[in-house]
Length: 304
Image 1: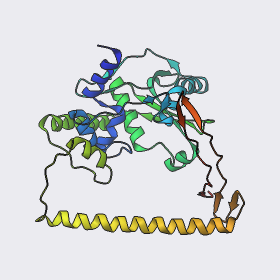
Image 2: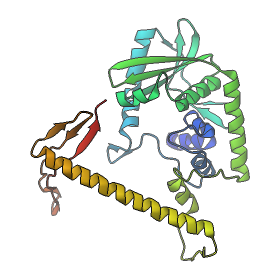
Image 3: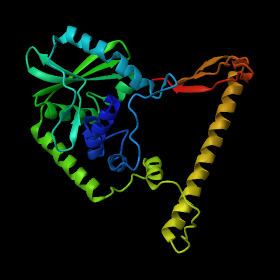
């Protein structure tokens, strides 16, 4: 078994520390419904930090991984951490596992773990005084798995400001994490599917159902289906109305701006430059990729 295959098998066999927030309905990325189907094997688990044809699928994740070692070195210089032995994987033997970003020793607190995050300033402002709950649950999970009494979240903000958020181990919370993990695996084994979050689980639900057939579903006696169809059309009408409102406002603003490339308003700023034309180019002998004519962009932002 290759290293990649071994890692995939391990990830399928545990709830990762980064997935724990889904058990608390606190993950911005994964719902309990989606996690259930990942572990059942009915939908694929996205490849973390995937690079396709040399291009990262998620630039934030890609650069977070690339800069992780440098951020850890900066934290060691600033706060005096030293290294302790790394392990390949941590698991409680009951379906909970993962690998912290770094296992460290603090001069005052002894052995602990470091979790590294990288965010821009706008995202950091949304946090308030501390990182969001999903990061804190991840931190507590790693502390419990590693049997340590502290975990620090090291955050590089905007590429030029390093923050440290310190957390002691909370045994009662970790016990609840383990309890929910055990119950989740019981549901997976028994086929007890969680209720989908219909606002977020559309893609996961479609994937879990599989390919459609030529069968015709007869819902003529289903009043709930009739109401949902009306809700869909009402929502579409609101969306179309909103798009029309946006287009009218945008066109009127462009008329007011004229040929200026930018505009300042009391509470907003507008960018309205024209992009450059791109010429035709030859991809390979006999294959020409047509160029693209430049267009005038419209970018409106609120002044914070």
